Length: 156
Image 1 (spheres, helix red, strand yellow):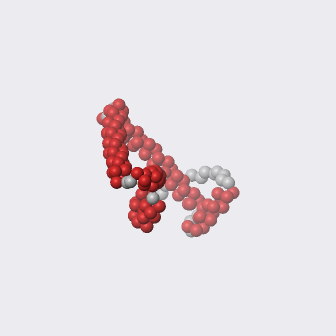
Image 2: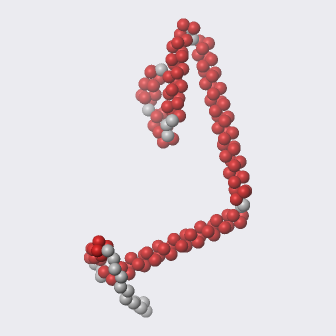
Image 3: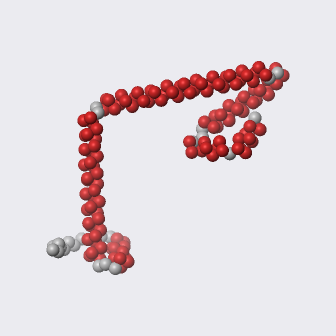
């Protein structure tokens, strides 16, 4: 059974009309058929957006009916606090290692070489800061570039 068609007249900008004519010629279909297909696609797209919004609302309602927002916030806060405490432990360990290393060097360096040690320490700290400023995606390349690491070490 063929769908009943009704005629609708509307105006479009000249550029759009030219684009429609070119597209209908490329697809070898009449202009009216092309416009019908485009209208169908547009309506289906709009319907899909409404469906997505509807489904999103349902999911939100289900989540909030199972978990109260306060519960979700509490869970996230606990995990955030846990990560912060772990980072503090790592920071404390790293700082402890830094000062241990400095003390070890001071024990083996003659007092005449203290100026040299100060220079080494300053350059090392500057390189440490430069390293910490690198983005995550740069770290692997930096650490795998042995020649560059040797150059940086030689400069110290």
